[in-house]
Amino acid sequence: MISWIGENFASIVLLLILAAIVFFLIRSKIRERKHGTCSCGCGCAGCSGCASRKKEDEKL
Image 1 (tube, rainbow, N blue to C red):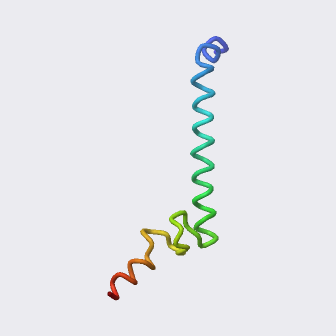
Image 2: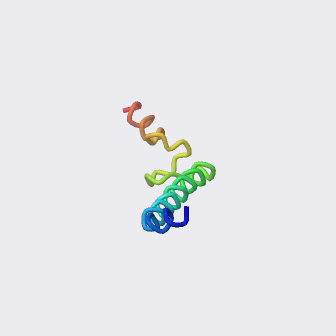
């Protein structure tokens, strides 16, 4: 088992780094939704394609 870890150490480290990046991205998105902000810059609470912008477009 120790020899396997030694042979695959670089792959294991890379996997852990990628998993941490994905974890923090998902956590960031969850926090944005809970606080009612979105990364698109429009500030809409739902952030599913900026619903507030869609409503404005429908009125025109």
